[in-house]
Length: 70
Image (cartoon, rainbow, N blue to C red):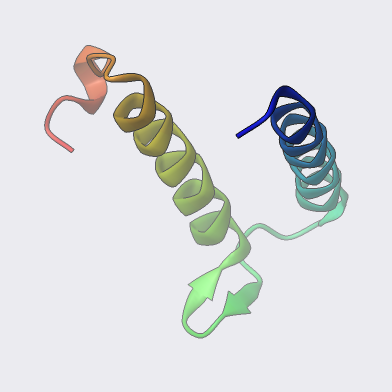
């Protein structure tokens, strides 16, 4: 992938991350239903977990101790 494409990918990810965080902060009830049986809080926790684990896998970094069992 060329540098320009990587830069565009990083910018898009930063924008999407910011919009997602703003959306989650705007909600009043973390227990409100969001996706199927999952609450807004469940979805937010899942997004964090997937982001952390994907980053660790992509960088071949060891997980922090609290994530080691996952």
